[in-house]
Image (cartoon, rainbow, N blue to C red; front, side, top):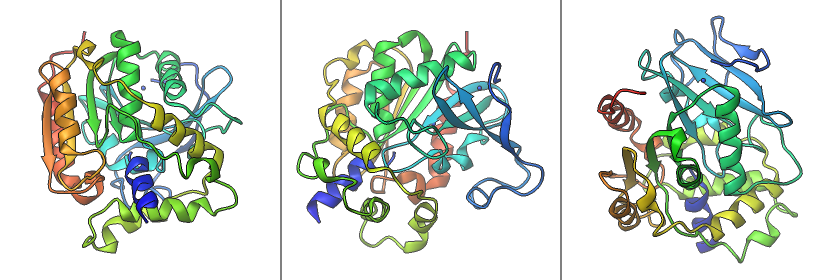
Length: 304
């Protein structure tokens, strides 16, 4: 149970015009797709389409208009955790939620599931979509990816939102070699999600997440978790000089409040907001999450 609980907290988490991309494969003309109907208001325009990164195709969900805000998911979730936020800040912000390589509807290469590669893919996505600078929102592993992106490509970051994440390694050396063989990783992923919530959480809070879990590729998860176990940018974050919001659940026992405050201490002017939740405050307290993110966006200096 300890290993699966660590896996879970690690894993969970963990977010524009489209010149040169393939046509949308799914747009709303009334009813939303079943997996999105519970989280996108029926009158909110959206589109899901594939973007060709010159050899790798990523699935992207978009809604709203305005400056780009890009949402990045974690290791056992997909872009389908973000629909209720993607269009929430229009017309000031157009929301984009991406399925990372290997996840959701995106292409699934044989390998390449590491934090540096995910970061490189996101920069290529921004290039293809002709986005020079964006607000980036990353949950859990997504937050780790965005720390790497902000360090390597500071010119592409207007602001940073780090949710339930850490600046150091998350080590799962015992289980990583066996993930995906011969276990049913879909069931493992379900256990991770359930165990990321406080023990007294009602099933209705996390059931929508369970209902949207696809069948996972064990190679994707194994390589991603290996990369998470090797991640460490502690001490480097002083180089980040953009507005930064850090969100943390006080009941999160891996991406802890102490870790969040350690990240805050490195990034000048950053702020920490605590929730009375576990790892996944987006499910436990979605209204406050949306409001806090909205207030942060309102306070940003004008885009240049």
